Length: 253
Image (tube, rainbow, N blue to C red; front, side):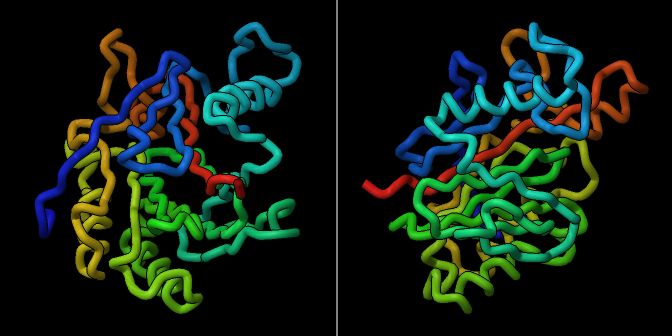
């Protein structure tokens, strides 16, 4: 159970299919691809969609570029996480942008750099401050949540001098599986970590409580997002895929 009541925020879905919060809610460029935009992970073959079906990876690259274009991002400056279901924190700056090692937390201070992940049903959590002096991306699945990966990230940010304490944080939660469809409430457990460390509930940006990657549907009746658990439960009738969660530090003006 949440320690404090939260004010939930509606995710807006643009005509292009990218879900996002209002800019006044979370100002760094960010977005979450909906199922209609196609698979975003190179682990899974994507139907041709009019692209060259002899190259199963080209379609994923095109799908990703459509998200990046909507957000005004250059795909060269997007680092996609290689999650391991652990608590390894990786700083991504300079030369490390070209060859990011595996980990479940990415942290950058490079203006114009975007951090991204293709979640299964786990929570993508983005952290920044009011100055947008850094951006962190936390992959919080069941194992990571039990290992308190979010708390370890907060302690890392304090130790490195990115923040004075957790009250400086502006956290943003992306879509994930919720209590309605999963025994472990990953969302509430991670929100409580933030509250325990002193983050104001007013600073936490979270999608409406009814938004679940497993069961939420658009007005059209189509599922909102890819869900690993839903695909597994459908006995192969639904293709595997992943959505993309991405946010960026604004470029230097």
